[in-house]
Image 1 (tube, rainbow, N blue to C red):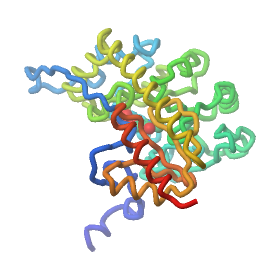
Image 2 (spheres, helix red, strand yellow):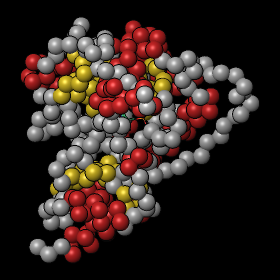
Image 3 (tube, rainbow, N blue to C red):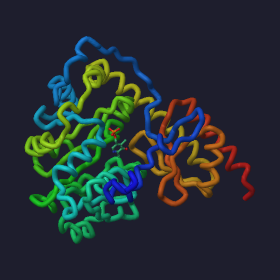
Length: 352
Ligand SMILES: *Cc1c(COP(=O)(O)O)cnc(C)c1O
């Protein structure tokens, strides 16, 4: 037997998530992974690294609970929100029996995590307005344990109607958990569903420090849910999931001065997003969709050629599965200006 044949069938057949990092590219403007352009400074203490970390560091849970206006018992911290997705699937879905449901076009990791654990995936595409198709979802709930709803949705950028999320929570009460992925909610905190936690025992919310908090490299995420759900997730999490330096840095990011800094940086990104949206929106045959996160989905007349020209020029953006659409992360003002200028030049070159 070859080593490859020793692997599980599921793993042999799996296509890994095509993360921005895996796709590669070379350039000096990276607007393909919804990272923050801000690199903030932190201090770390190295005097207790001989000891294991606590499984769920109290000070980190408390800091995030205070930030999110929930109780500490409603918070779980993990290696990014991505690990939260995985823990939910492992804790709630019986392999080769239960399913998750998600609504494309959306974030790719729900499907990949499910497939890795031999959990089936059901899809109910978003409507033409990129909203939940509730009647269709209702007909597909057999065997579904988790329903992933991403708001603001990646890659479309829009918010999912709160009323629809509430209707979905009612529809699935006692049958399935509704997991609202709020990875980008810090760019529009007023749209959070976190206030519904006390009302709905089947609501789970995913959060991360990777986007607005400018800490993608830290790998720190949070799952917010009622304590019953959190306790189940704690049964399947690794014994020491949060490295000591991660807690040190995350607690600084969630301190009053850290939060103030993030607030300013979010305002800056809003301004750059408005700049890019206005600039791109003026170009002929270009559609910029309203976006609530740190990225914009943009439709171009010939997205493939444009994407490649940008790539060759060292401006790395993200292809989207939506026809002729490119997702552009909001970078610094300088990066936005250079990207807009290059795109304008390319589109003007094209003969009509
Ligand atoms: C970036 C992203 C995540 C993952 O965040 P990490 O905390 O970095 O793992 C989850 N969901 C969505 C929609 C994202 O865009």
